[in-house]
Length: 164
Image (cartoon, rainbow, N blue to C red; front, side, top):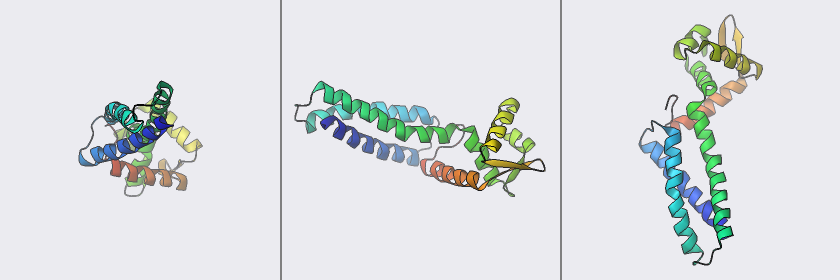
């Protein structure tokens, strides 16, 4: 049980440290920064495990805590990674930021010159109900607007932007 408690404590400390790190300095390589903070907290986990367990923790408890810590890290890091690298979220936020909140395919293509990838992704976004096409322009649906608004707020808070 001590391993799980220590894993939760370390995961919470890592969330706070990562949030501060991202707020204080714009990270160029988001995934790299997340992995470094996770690896950096492994010695902290070990010290907390020894200290809080009074040296009586078993190897099974230690490994169990490491696994819980890894799971918590994944739950924390995955949304940030998706926000900083997702082409879908970037396109929806681009549409949302446009003056009329709509862009032509050509305007999207100017920002992301990947014809085949863009066509496939835009079709998938239309099918899933995130954007719609009207007279050759793409706009976000209410569902897309919600996703784009949440993603924009999280990206601003964590200071992670497309291309980082």
